[in-house]
Image (cartoon, rainbow, N blue to C red; front, side):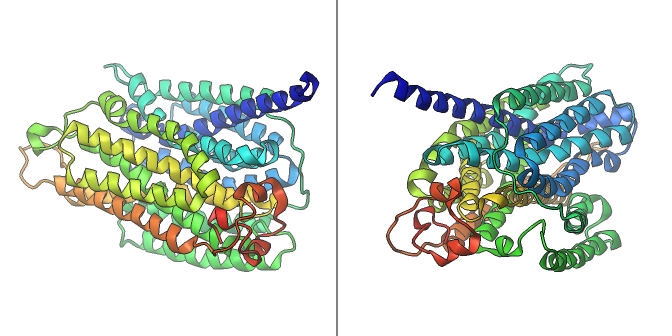
Length: 510
């Protein structure tokens, strides 16, 4: 073959590499924003002179912002161009990070966190760009790598924050300045390395659908994140959940009546998409149960509790959480290859087995350093495999013009699972405390609370396996078209996928 023939192919391969790098960096920065303030909430509370209940809004605000803006911006990118939307969202994230770093009051800090939360839309937009720019045979690996950076970024944020706030005169604002630097770097990478959008559907933005969906998600996630402070049986909590059900029904009715809905209900209830979103909730739950459960466990003072490792925030982050985060990143390309050759159903099942095994190990033995780290490595690989499989299921099940909104809804499912994980861990540890402590000692969780937390997380991953086995069951027949074919845009509608059972058999989604 001549040099003239091979040159374009080599150039295209290089372009794919830099595109995947830029989008992976952007996705990593997004995931960092979610866990960044977790280790420094105490510092923020003391510095701003506020209460524990009030400072919890530093994390809650980001979650709620993500729930409102992710589906809207994912759909906007499909309609009006993914790169311009990506650049605008990254710009908002930079502004939010600067505001958070400069904030001298809690309301201003929460505003910065709201702007950071809007950047969660970067992930579904990134997957939509990959669908356009990466060759079909390379697409599963590219999606898996970008998805794997989510778990890595979450762990990296905990570690970096621990490093920046480890001194006696630690300033929590350093963590937000670090976030600003990463956000600027991601913005430059996307501007210079990601090509302009080729596919635009145009059309009108479904403002009413976005508004009703946003209200429904707010009413759902608000009590999940604040229920521990409000009381799970309080009027505010129960009223919010009831309101979420009502607004969910209003949203569905709205989407069925408008001409250009934000979310096509046929796509939303299509079995593979529905099962991928359920898996997203369960995997997100497990990821946060690992981060919070292990972080709290290793910091327990052994002299008072009889268990724990007396670890500082820095040691908890570097020694116990960083190894699992690194494994998540290393496992992502492996997950991509497995998705390509075995299908996402098999990879999701493997994630379930690994996650259940890792958490079962933690539940049975969390008194040895090697056990906590070893189980964390297994859970890290499980989360990475789960994140690699879910976008592949969705890309094989929706047409090109719905990929942004479909992955946006899946991002919300993972965020919802993370919120539920945080609420469950906090509630369990607060409800199971050690009865006999020295006078003046603060309430400390009993060891049984950690065993229960890890046991529930093991069950959540076991349910991922059930979703994979029953919800994504295959129909036997000729394996003629891989998941990557439909990801390249050859499947005209989600209903056509259901009508052609043999076409996506290898994807394991029909």
